[in-house]
Image 1: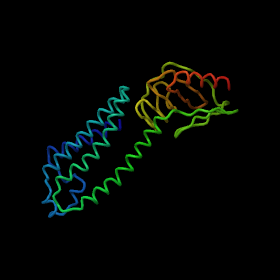
Image 2: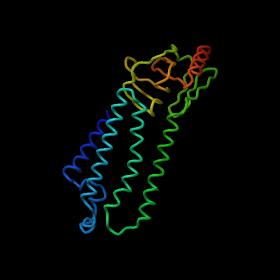
Image 3: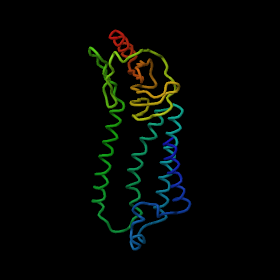
Image 4: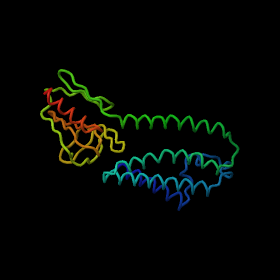
Length: 235
């Protein structure tokens, strides 16, 4: 739903720039003095930013539709394309500004902003695709990671090993990196629960507690079965 809303906003913005030539919507240009605006190719700048907004809107729409119908890898590729496209447009639109400026300084400022953002996205991708780390103690199972949880054995009501899980309706709070889901999601007929799964791989372990459920699995199906067996031995 959020992806569709953002896509719609970008598409509307793109149309306003491309069709209606509303260059006052362009950040940076709208704060220039009238003297500096005279040295800007307004037609080229407005066209480029309009195309950029339409491209972002299209990518967000495609990613949203792909997520809705379960094509999570396609959705991920769509989202990941946005960052390099943004980097490109930041440098590309400079050709339309003919005002004297310190190009080296502008490049450094852009890199100072873009490099940390790129590193952050890389870190989130790494964390989001890591395998869930599971350990057992005398009284609990511990699932590690950013959305990890300790589950005491005496709070567990039932444990299942299943080949399929209900449809994932939406993310409530977590990470959705392709088929790697970490955090809180809502599933059809099951309500809210916490997932640590590769949604395209089976089987899945479902742990039912007094007021919540947890679902986890691993890339290696044998590891999933092994964790399921060990958990049953502990109960």
